[in-house]
Image (cartoon, rainbow, N blue to C red; front, side):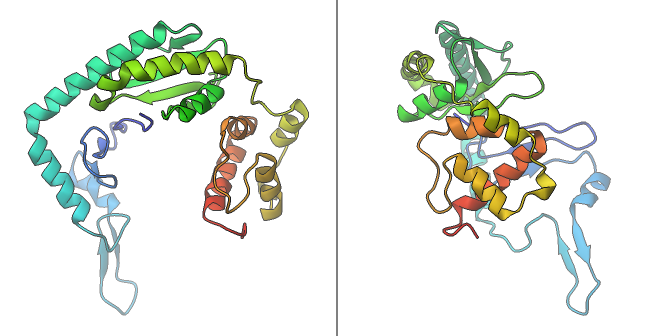
Length: 261
Protein backbone atom coordinates (compact mmCIF):
# COMPACT_ATOMS: atom_id res chain seq x y z
CA UNK A 1 0.00 0.00 0.00
CA UNK A 2 2.96 2.28 -0.34
CA UNK A 3 3.85 2.96 -3.93
CA UNK A 4 2.54 5.84 -6.01
CA UNK A 5 -0.06 5.17 -8.67
CA UNK A 6 0.52 5.32 -12.45
CA UNK A 7 1.47 8.86 -13.32
CA UNK A 8 0.47 11.15 -16.16
CA UNK A 9 2.98 13.55 -17.66
CA UNK A 10 2.18 16.96 -19.08
CA UNK A 11 0.60 17.38 -22.48
CA UNK A 12 3.95 17.88 -24.22
CA UNK A 13 5.08 14.43 -23.13
CA UNK A 14 2.80 11.48 -23.27
CA UNK A 15 1.19 9.34 -20.56
CA UNK A 16 3.34 6.93 -18.62
CA UNK A 17 2.40 3.88 -16.62
CA UNK A 18 4.27 1.51 -14.35
CA UNK A 19 2.59 -1.79 -15.16
CA UNK A 20 3.60 -3.34 -11.84
CA UNK A 21 1.06 -1.11 -10.12
CA UNK A 22 -2.45 -1.32 -11.50
CA UNK A 23 -1.40 -3.43 -14.45
CA UNK A 24 -0.48 -6.16 -11.91
CA UNK A 25 2.64 -7.15 -13.86
CA UNK A 26 6.11 -7.76 -12.44
CA UNK A 27 8.17 -4.79 -11.31
CA UNK A 28 10.36 -3.24 -13.96
CA UNK A 29 7.78 -3.15 -16.77
CA UNK A 30 6.84 0.43 -17.63
CA UNK A 31 5.23 2.10 -20.62
CA UNK A 32 5.71 5.51 -22.22
CA UNK A 33 3.19 6.47 -24.91
CA UNK A 34 4.15 9.37 -27.16
CA UNK A 35 1.75 11.61 -29.01
CA UNK A 36 3.66 11.12 -32.26
CA UNK A 37 6.91 9.74 -33.69
CA UNK A 38 8.59 13.16 -33.59
CA UNK A 39 8.38 13.24 -29.80
CA UNK A 40 9.40 9.61 -29.46
CA UNK A 41 12.55 10.25 -31.51
CA UNK A 42 14.08 12.22 -28.61
CA UNK A 43 14.04 9.11 -26.44
CA UNK A 44 16.45 7.19 -28.65
CA UNK A 45 20.22 7.27 -28.36
CA UNK A 46 22.35 6.74 -31.46
CA UNK A 47 26.08 7.14 -32.01
CA UNK A 48 28.35 6.53 -34.97
CA UNK A 49 31.24 8.49 -33.45
CA UNK A 50 33.60 5.57 -33.13
CA UNK A 51 35.18 2.93 -35.42
CA UNK A 52 33.00 0.12 -34.09
CA UNK A 53 29.45 -0.92 -34.92
CA UNK A 54 26.74 1.75 -35.05
CA UNK A 55 25.02 2.06 -31.67
CA UNK A 56 21.29 2.72 -31.25
CA UNK A 57 19.29 2.15 -28.10
CA UNK A 58 15.56 2.86 -27.80
CA UNK A 59 15.69 2.97 -23.98
CA UNK A 60 18.06 3.95 -21.18
CA UNK A 61 19.06 0.31 -20.89
CA UNK A 62 21.05 -1.11 -23.75
CA UNK A 63 21.28 -4.87 -23.40
CA UNK A 64 18.23 -6.01 -21.48
CA UNK A 65 16.08 -9.06 -20.99
CA UNK A 66 12.76 -9.35 -22.78
CA UNK A 67 11.41 -11.44 -19.89
CA UNK A 68 9.61 -8.55 -18.18
CA UNK A 69 8.06 -7.44 -21.46
CA UNK A 70 6.83 -10.97 -22.15
CA UNK A 71 5.44 -11.44 -18.65
CA UNK A 72 3.67 -8.06 -18.76
CA UNK A 73 2.11 -8.94 -22.11
CA UNK A 74 0.95 -12.29 -20.70
CA UNK A 75 -0.64 -10.63 -17.66
CA UNK A 76 -2.42 -8.02 -19.78
CA UNK A 77 -3.79 -10.72 -22.06
CA UNK A 78 -4.81 -12.95 -19.16
CA UNK A 79 -6.65 -10.28 -17.16
CA UNK A 80 -8.29 -8.64 -20.18
CA UNK A 81 -10.58 -5.60 -20.36
CA UNK A 82 -13.33 -7.07 -18.20
CA UNK A 83 -10.86 -8.26 -15.61
CA UNK A 84 -9.26 -4.82 -15.30
CA UNK A 85 -12.70 -3.21 -15.04
CA UNK A 86 -13.53 -5.55 -12.16
CA UNK A 87 -10.20 -4.84 -10.47
CA UNK A 88 -10.71 -1.09 -10.85
CA UNK A 89 -14.15 -1.32 -9.28
CA UNK A 90 -12.77 -3.38 -6.39
CA UNK A 91 -9.98 -0.85 -5.83
CA UNK A 92 -12.45 2.04 -5.74
CA UNK A 93 -14.68 0.20 -3.27
CA UNK A 94 -11.64 -0.45 -1.08
CA UNK A 95 -10.67 3.23 -1.30
CA UNK A 96 -14.13 4.29 -0.17
CA UNK A 97 -13.88 1.91 2.79
CA UNK A 98 -10.41 3.19 3.74
CA UNK A 99 -11.44 6.86 3.47
CA UNK A 100 -14.56 6.31 5.56
CA UNK A 101 -12.58 4.31 8.14
CA UNK A 102 -9.82 6.90 8.45
CA UNK A 103 -12.36 9.67 8.99
CA UNK A 104 -13.77 7.70 11.95
CA UNK A 105 -10.38 7.58 13.71
CA UNK A 106 -9.92 10.37 16.24
CA UNK A 107 -7.01 12.59 15.28
CA UNK A 108 -6.85 11.58 11.61
CA UNK A 109 -8.30 13.22 8.55
CA UNK A 110 -8.13 12.60 4.82
CA UNK A 111 -6.85 15.51 2.78
CA UNK A 112 -9.11 16.39 -0.11
CA UNK A 113 -11.72 14.10 -1.63
CA UNK A 114 -9.89 11.20 -3.33
CA UNK A 115 -11.37 10.58 -6.77
CA UNK A 116 -9.13 7.59 -7.40
CA UNK A 117 -7.09 5.19 -5.28
CA UNK A 118 -4.56 7.51 -3.63
CA UNK A 119 -5.28 8.59 -0.06
CA UNK A 120 -3.37 11.25 1.86
CA UNK A 121 -3.82 11.19 5.63
CA UNK A 122 -2.97 13.98 8.07
CA UNK A 123 -3.05 14.05 11.87
CA UNK A 124 -3.83 16.82 14.30
CA UNK A 125 -2.78 14.95 17.46
CA UNK A 126 0.42 13.10 16.59
CA UNK A 127 3.30 13.02 14.15
CA UNK A 128 2.58 10.88 11.04
CA UNK A 129 6.20 9.71 11.15
CA UNK A 130 5.57 8.01 14.48
CA UNK A 131 2.31 6.55 13.18
CA UNK A 132 4.17 5.07 10.21
CA UNK A 133 6.65 3.40 12.56
CA UNK A 134 3.85 1.99 14.72
CA UNK A 135 2.08 0.63 11.66
CA UNK A 136 5.27 -1.00 10.42
CA UNK A 137 5.54 -2.84 13.74
CA UNK A 138 2.04 -4.15 13.08
CA UNK A 139 2.94 -5.41 9.62
CA UNK A 140 1.72 -2.49 7.50
CA UNK A 141 3.71 -0.05 5.41
CA UNK A 142 2.19 3.42 5.06
CA UNK A 143 4.45 5.79 3.14
CA UNK A 144 5.45 8.80 5.29
CA UNK A 145 5.61 12.12 3.46
CA UNK A 146 7.69 15.05 4.66
CA UNK A 147 6.54 18.64 4.93
CA UNK A 148 6.66 20.71 1.76
CA UNK A 149 5.64 24.22 0.78
CA UNK A 150 3.59 24.87 3.90
CA UNK A 151 2.07 21.37 3.95
CA UNK A 152 2.61 19.36 7.10
CA UNK A 153 3.81 15.74 7.20
CA UNK A 154 1.29 13.19 6.03
CA UNK A 155 0.85 9.48 5.26
CA UNK A 156 0.38 8.20 1.72
CA UNK A 157 -1.69 5.12 0.91
CA UNK A 158 -2.06 3.50 -2.50
CA UNK A 159 -5.14 1.31 -2.39
CA UNK A 160 -5.45 -1.81 -4.55
CA UNK A 161 -8.08 -4.56 -4.89
CA UNK A 162 -6.05 -6.59 -2.39
CA UNK A 163 -6.70 -3.90 0.22
CA UNK A 164 -10.44 -4.53 0.36
CA UNK A 165 -10.49 -7.84 2.28
CA UNK A 166 -7.95 -6.49 4.80
CA UNK A 167 -9.18 -2.90 5.10
CA UNK A 168 -10.96 -3.51 8.42
CA UNK A 169 -7.84 -5.08 9.97
CA UNK A 170 -5.66 -2.27 8.69
CA UNK A 171 -7.99 0.41 10.02
CA UNK A 172 -8.17 -1.24 13.44
CA UNK A 173 -4.37 -1.32 13.63
CA UNK A 174 -4.22 2.27 12.40
CA UNK A 175 -6.52 3.44 15.19
CA UNK A 176 -4.33 1.69 17.76
CA UNK A 177 -1.14 3.04 16.14
CA UNK A 178 -2.48 6.59 16.40
CA UNK A 179 -3.32 6.12 20.09
CA UNK A 180 0.18 4.79 20.82
CA UNK A 181 1.93 7.40 18.66
CA UNK A 182 0.06 10.21 20.40
CA UNK A 183 1.94 9.38 23.62
CA UNK A 184 5.36 9.22 21.97
CA UNK A 185 7.80 12.15 22.03
CA UNK A 186 8.22 14.18 18.88
CA UNK A 187 10.78 12.70 16.49
CA UNK A 188 12.04 16.19 15.63
CA UNK A 189 15.73 16.81 16.30
CA UNK A 190 16.92 19.20 18.97
CA UNK A 191 16.34 22.79 17.71
CA UNK A 192 20.08 23.50 17.78
CA UNK A 193 20.72 20.39 15.66
CA UNK A 194 17.96 21.37 13.24
CA UNK A 195 19.42 24.86 12.95
CA UNK A 196 22.88 23.45 12.30
CA UNK A 197 21.52 21.09 9.63
CA UNK A 198 19.64 23.89 7.88
CA UNK A 199 22.82 26.00 7.80
CA UNK A 200 24.94 23.36 6.04
CA UNK A 201 26.15 24.15 2.54
CA UNK A 202 25.77 21.06 0.32
CA UNK A 203 28.61 22.23 -1.92
CA UNK A 204 31.04 22.16 1.00
CA UNK A 205 30.11 18.77 2.46
CA UNK A 206 32.64 15.98 2.02
CA UNK A 207 32.22 12.25 2.64
CA UNK A 208 33.30 12.56 6.29
CA UNK A 209 30.77 15.34 6.90
CA UNK A 210 27.97 13.30 5.38
CA UNK A 211 28.99 10.23 7.38
CA UNK A 212 28.83 12.30 10.58
CA UNK A 213 25.33 13.54 9.76
CA UNK A 214 24.13 10.02 8.97
CA UNK A 215 25.67 8.73 12.18
CA UNK A 216 23.80 11.41 14.13
CA UNK A 217 20.62 9.97 12.62
CA UNK A 218 21.61 6.46 13.68
CA UNK A 219 22.65 5.31 10.21
CA UNK A 220 25.93 3.40 10.09
CA UNK A 221 27.17 2.00 6.76
CA UNK A 222 26.71 -1.73 6.55
CA UNK A 223 24.22 -1.90 9.42
CA UNK A 224 21.05 -1.34 7.42
CA UNK A 225 18.09 0.84 8.31
CA UNK A 226 17.30 1.78 11.93
CA UNK A 227 14.32 -0.01 13.48
CA UNK A 228 12.40 3.27 13.71
CA UNK A 229 12.64 5.69 10.83
CA UNK A 230 10.81 8.66 12.37
CA UNK A 231 13.93 10.33 13.87
CA UNK A 232 15.81 9.85 10.60
CA UNK A 233 13.01 11.31 8.51
CA UNK A 234 12.52 14.18 10.95
CA UNK A 235 16.21 15.03 10.67
CA UNK A 236 15.87 14.90 6.89
CA UNK A 237 12.81 17.14 7.11
CA UNK A 238 14.87 19.78 8.90
CA UNK A 239 17.14 20.16 5.86
CA UNK A 240 16.50 22.38 2.84
CA UNK A 241 15.56 20.63 -0.41
CA UNK A 242 19.02 20.45 -1.96
CA UNK A 243 20.43 19.03 1.26
CA UNK A 244 17.53 16.57 1.55
CA UNK A 245 18.37 15.16 -1.86
CA UNK A 246 22.07 14.89 -0.98
CA UNK A 247 21.22 13.05 2.26
CA UNK A 248 18.97 10.65 0.34
CA UNK A 249 21.79 9.82 -2.07
CA UNK A 250 24.22 9.27 0.79
CA UNK A 251 21.71 7.14 2.68
CA UNK A 252 21.10 4.85 -0.28
CA UNK A 253 24.85 4.62 -0.78
CA UNK A 254 25.30 3.62 2.88
CA UNK A 255 22.99 0.63 2.36
CA UNK A 256 25.40 -0.81 -0.17
CA UNK A 257 28.58 -0.07 1.70
CA UNK A 258 30.18 -2.00 4.57
CA UNK A 259 32.88 0.55 5.14
CA UNK A 260 31.26 3.82 4.18
CA UNK A 261 33.62 4.17 1.21
